[in-house]
Image 1 (cartoon, rainbow, N blue to C red):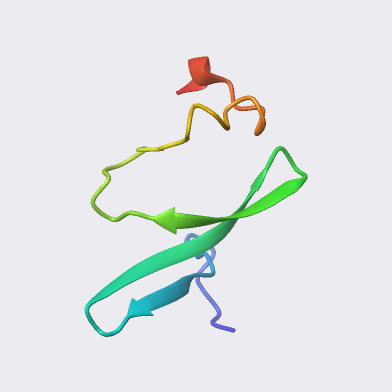
Image 2 (cartoon, rainbow, N blue to C red; image 1 turned 30 degrees about the horizontal axis):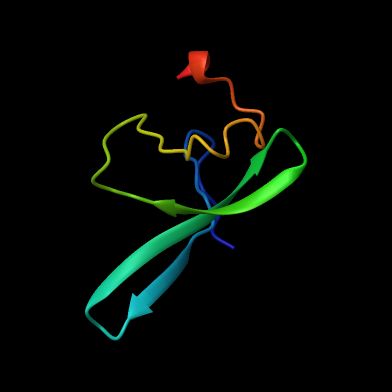
Length: 67
């Protein structure tokens, strides 16, 4: 484990390599303190950009008004 200065933050990531042609970066997030999901990180999405399927908003108890 790397020792980071107190003002630094880090997250664990997983990398998927598709035959050397493309890569995706994933991490785990916890929703509502009980559901842990693997999430694709999109570096081109922009700051504070979140994409959720409207079909899953109620399941994940996500309030659309907060976005």
